[in-house]
Image 1: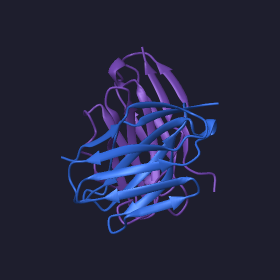
Image 2: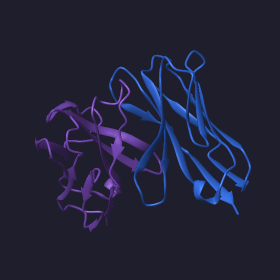
Image 3: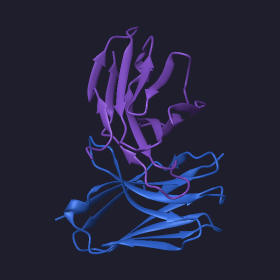
Image 4: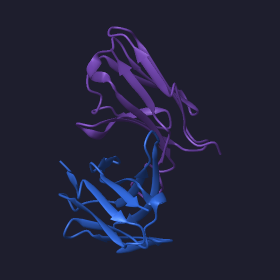
Length: 116
Length: 111
């Protein structure tokens, strides 16, 4: 398996623009997670899905952030409008049973977002 | 709210040395604890996963221990190599089915 695939790997955008980050989880995994990593706050869970259904979005910082999972092989994280403080690395991850019962969680290589 | 602390934040050792990385967590009601490795510009790679009922896990030169009651875990790396240089993060999984990460220990192994 190719692992968790994220795109774009790097994006530089101007403040106010819409940003869409994409993720393809590992085939057969039924949990998908979006994390954000910054120097100040470390790794934070934004939202996670189980069988394409959002389960917990309490980590989504503001209404400017939204996430969708239209099918088992694709998810998007959208920021509209983007702000400089959104600059971070956004990771997508997937696992078989949510991680808590022992299945390993697999991370993509991240989308490096810079908002200027 | 679960909080995970990793000490030290950075560590530099000569090649061949054995070393220990520390992780502590405030809420002992966890399902498991994982150690991850992160290389610069890359994602996280899971190294070891310890279930809450287990005391330790081993993989090659790595050994992770878990003392749930005291809220501590250690990652032991034997005979360190320059290729071990990376940031090591621990994360605990609680009832919310989400991982809470520590801020990591940046390890540099000098040749």
